[in-house]
Image (cartoon, rainbow, N blue to C red; front, side, top):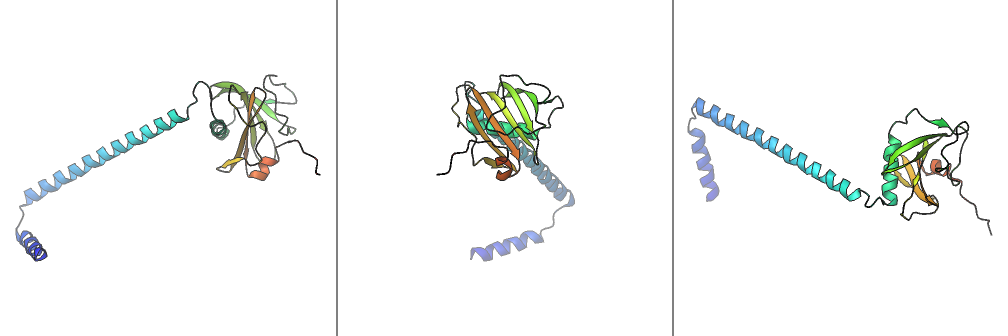
Length: 197
């Protein structure tokens, strides 16, 4: 019964002529209201996205200069994606600062270059660019009071075609980032071999 009433009411409304000026004013107001709503929705969406980024940065920020292994790996992967500056030094010709030696657990191929690292999560250090079939870099900074693994992982963190691992040797934190697959990553490792029983 209600459906029949709705059908009759709709038909009656269609039969009533709408003056041209009224129709134009109503459509104009409707269009303006839609436009305002779109801008409001866009503004609210932008504010929500900014708030989400701010919270993510705040949660991921190191406290008291300390950070996790994953934060160190993420920072190294981000830095790895940036273009290398041209002020690097050939390791065989220029000795790097002795405070940041290359890790004994990473191969040091001929043609290895080093460059200063001004800000790695608030710390200074060096980047060793390792030549090879794929691009690789070793980041070296003071480790602070964090506790990291004592050798590179055999199962590296993998993302966007890059493999990475972080470890600590003495007071230094090392992060190896390799463009490629796990096999490419393993090609840069110089891990101790245990005898086969």
